[in-house]
Image (cartoon, rainbow, N blue to C red; front, side):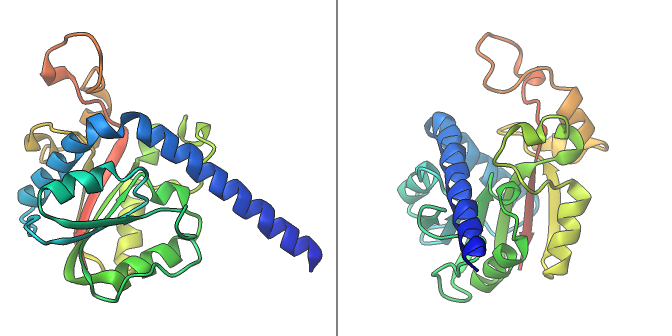
Length: 229
């Protein structure tokens, strides 16, 4: 019994440390990128004919890090709030939000850090309103498998088909999974072999320091998923 307690304490300490490392990594780029991320969210909602963010829309950012995305959404009169591992054990504790209370839930760079996905997705399904929208951004293991575990906080890999199957288990509908291309033309979400193009056609990341034509920027090994309850 004592050994189990010590094991659990060690696991919780390691997990908390992992989230601290994760949040520091996100924070390094969050302030400059959050506006672009928010704009990309609006683009994908419109592209796939989902309801758009509007004044007083209720949004929960699970794994919110430093909360910079929430701050930007609040400036747009959106009722946004966040929860992170410093507030709650996202794998085992119930998220303190009412059933059917949120219009949108965002999981940005979160699910790959969670072992107990059953608990997380069950909480998400409970909290979302009917036809509420879930937005997920996570590495696409098919295109990043060589370096995925270089990040010691990564524990659960997802591919396009794997994530879609997972969401179907929880009866999410209208599931769209496309490359995470920040502020690129929505044209790239409709082309055949879109993930291949996102990985190999674009030559440079969007944040490359030197000048290069925008057409060739945007390389991505990450996916974005949008679906509704």
